[in-house]
Length: 154
Image (cartoon, rainbow, N blue to C red):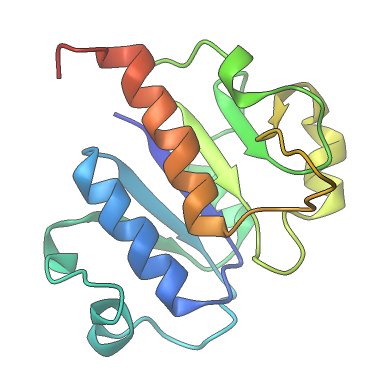
């Protein structure tokens, strides 16, 4: 359905919550190391209420280069950032798209955002808000993809 890519996640509870969302939409979760918390354990993901972690389509990569060897970036790779003016709802998503999200405290690395600037997307915010929680942002964009692909036919 959709591929969610977390690049350098730092908070295990967010990873668990995002994993739960990926499972709910029949998505795939790709985790790119290094993590800010060591290894993913059942204890860490259970805190997020994910008792079906073993059923999640999950792949881990040692670094972004290893991920890109397996999934070469093209125009179906989108990069969520607060540093874009292109709203996520202006994109026409397709099955199999990749949507990247960066570390909770710093976002995606600037070199990635610069290289793929045409595919950067954002969730608009008012009142001077700088950002949203990572798991909330993943949910917002993921369910827009579900809406576009399936509408009321899911």
